[in-house]
Amino acid sequence: MTQEHSTARGPRPAGRPRDLERHRAVLTSTRAILVADGYPGVTFAEVARSAGVTRQLVYRWWPTKAALVSEAMFAAEATTWPSTFPGPLDHDVRTWVDAMVTHAARPDVRAGVRGLLAEIGTSDTLPGLSKHLITPIRHSLDALLTAAQARGEVHPDIDPVLTTETVTGAITMHLLLDRAEPPVITAHLTQLLTWAFGSRAAQQELPRPSAQGHP
Image (cartoon, rainbow, N blue to C red; front, side, top):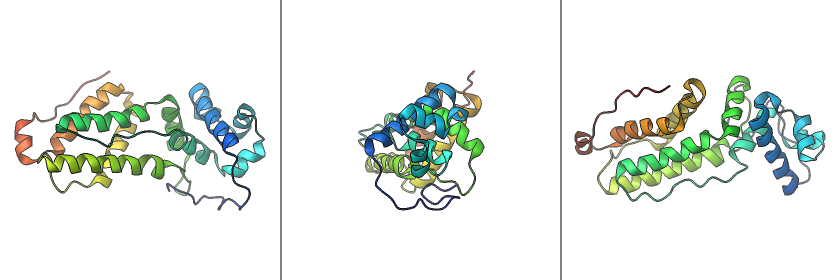
């Protein structure tokens, strides 16, 4: 699976720039259909009808359904990720995790991700995923770790790239597979990451993460 712009159908031919109003209308309609009818309900014909544009225009701007759904979920609505972390560590980790869980629990995102996981191949593009989700989340984690390291609360060698990918993957699987409630996911990952991030001295003061049951 790639995160940016190469596709199985090849690059989009050069043409006129997208009309921003119609572009937003298509993405808004796509999110609404995801919420109402799930991923199977998203067709280029239905999106075009709902957005008041032609089907040809949708095909011209998005080469695949996966590309359209991905941009609608990840790039269409600006999400403000936390950038200030005053401490203590467990509070900051909860703030970071909760922002990701809140985004992933949106009805359109849940429906879209479930459909993408079932359909996409290794060569499909997911516009917006890297630029508007993964990279901002990683920058937010960088800020958290920098602040916590200055307070002597965390290990100095935590890899923010691998950590971001691990945590976003865990959140996705919890929401889609075992249908855990968002507060349960936030509480569990906060406890787990606070202990994992903590310096040796901090770990001695924190309880070890324990298994948490949920419906």
